[in-house]
Length: 565
Picture 1: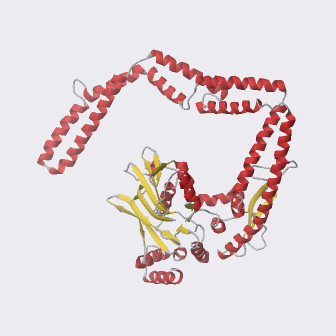
Picture 2: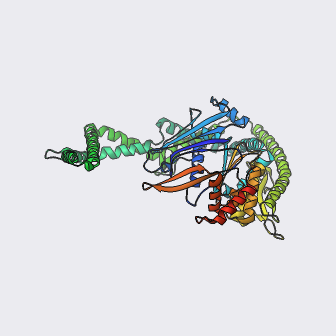
Picture 3: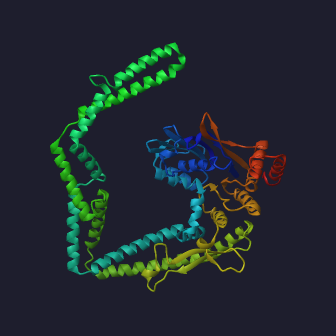
């Protein structure tokens, strides 16, 4: 469960400290106030993508930290595995992004990688936004939702491993079935390629470094002339920029002695002088280090010529990268090892393939049976929830069809023998059709909420975040969603961004995000609203900026009727 969130210089947020409680918490605020920035900062904290533009304008770094109460044994197991200790069943996660683009992260003071952070975050928070809602439009993701519901994610992963082994053995058998002379020629060619690339000792990015060095060496005279011209402009015999700046600094200093209003300008001139002087020294140092080395230029050009030859020979031409050549070498090595395997008797390998095919087919049948059982159960559970969310006449079905083909090789895929797709009929009498083709934004929101509800027991995360779950809905539907989320909050901590008062009044807690301008700087503030402040915020959500006595009375009435426990 998320207990505290501290944000500093992230996007429009200068400095914010937010405390969270159990239950259902709503995040509200005017359009454009930065509600999604708060969720964005949480996503960043939990291992999301880090970009320099996330840093508040005028700052050099942004930092987000959060305190989490651990509620799953899997979270504690992850910490034990990584040698990290919790304190009172809590961890402090901190992440930093600098204007150079470099980011760092810590869990309880221990540095961790971005991938480790994201892995641990799976046990803490599940963020649902429009990007995840769009996964309902991708049929390939439907199978994943069904497998989670059926509790067979690990089994499917085991099947995938078995399937990959089968595919690899088939590939080796196919290679062995080729003409023996062709196989020997292939081994000889691959061996030569691997040896040639390996002996060259290529390094990723080496071509870019060499090209930059060649450009510098081949342009030595022009480069040296330009640097010398810069140095003469800084501090030439007849006076230069530094001399002029020094005079300006002195004049400004004397002027500021006579008028204190000029002190800031004098100080800026002084800072400018020191900065330009430092730049001048760097250029002089650079000039003294410039040395023309024709032998090195020749070596660089020879090395580049070799790399270009490899790119044309083993990759897709000179526009490829050294990494592409190295990838080819890895693939060639793998194929070489497969071709060189000591299967003197092809019959042995054929028997292994047949055994794997039988094992995979039986395993796929078992997985398919569980999917069939849970597809019916899942369909009924989703329909029941959709009925409560204003879609009473809706029919929802998890469709399973067997993969096409007459042989095992065609019928099986990496995840079994089933094609899984969600079908929906939103109107009485209408046939069931693919969800991805006919559902509106509001319907997708509710289908996703229904899925999250039935999957929350299997979800290890203690906190569910819903960003823009109210897209395309209103009226009674919004009321039903608010009521549903409040009930869902009995099992999970729920955070929800909404602009609808009919959802917000069901929340146990409400946090307001407000954007304002102070000293010509736009900033977003985050704070909890309670009592009369919450009544005014609900009234604003009901009627906009023109809060009236009627809207205040209506807001108070709604909170009294739907709020609280």
